[in-house]
Image 1 (cartoon, rainbow, N blue to C red):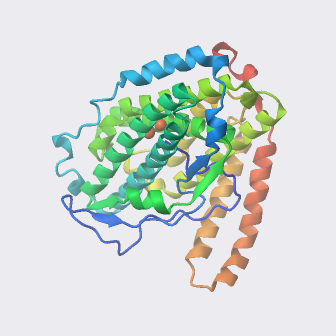
Image 2 (cartoon, helix red, strand yellow; image 1 turned 180 degrees about the vertical axis):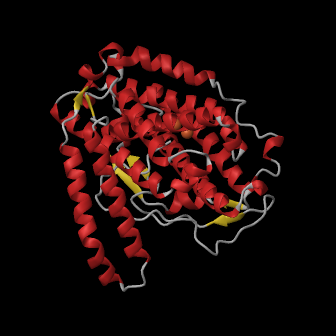
Image 3 (cartoon, rainbow, N blue to C red; image 1 turned 120 degrees about the vertical axis):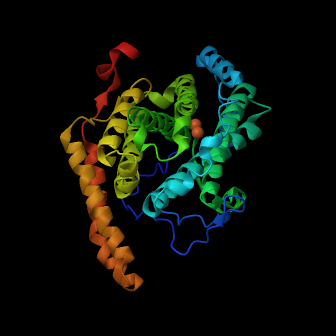
Length: 373
Ligand SMILES: [Fe+2]
Ligand SMILES: [Fe+2]
């Protein structure tokens, strides 16, 4: 999984929903779904400096990386992603509103997984000759992400829709990140992906009546893939210790934690209907996932955020409010320049909130979780 975005652009654009009038096919002949409009909240595709990646010296943590690669080779989920009879007719049981939010969830997840696949695949291909251990790890992770994306896309076809992944590959804008920023962003996205999937899985285990689709039965083993991917980036950052020590690293870690958490919170609250369909409260769910991801991040990042401080959540709520105002300004029929004038105060307010959040006193990881470091 790769994050929706790791750029703390203060402009929280509206999450675009499934467009109305979208052609819908049948499970046997699914229609190709138009990709949603790119916004700050939609998944992003990444590219990086492949030469710098190839030249990376892994010796400071080679033993751990080799052990992780050995785990990848075992391919625990080789036989996991096999559809069963439970999927037959499952899509027909959803009411139209749940169906709409669920398809959005599938699309967003599929795009994120696929974006991970593309990045890892390209990395493994480009550094194969110069850095075989790293290349092999990326190849195994690309294998996992391809499976995840494929499984989600197959579920979309149960609803008569499918993402054209070839089209996405060729037409999405790619964001360039230096390797260390790729590490922060993908580490967080893998770990947050782990907590997101396991939280839903455990909730549905206790509340089976809310299991609206059989894909959730697959989340337990699935999230273990994401957890291993996160552990790989943890080990990789420890092999490049400058990425996680010193003042600059502390500032960048805060920035990425905030960007990932704020984006997820704003996006999930705007789509709270999906979580309601699962019997979850979007805010409570996000608070849990953010708290757990923050705690996990303290194992490798030098600082983490003070997410148990109520002011942190007050400020995120203001981002949510501003985002709602931006969405309604966008939805109006006013001409573009007028829309921009109406949106300007909310952009400024968002920038101010993000700056205030960024400046909140962080927590030194060694003070936060001494036992696990
Ligand atoms: Fe994945
Ligand atoms: Fe992953």
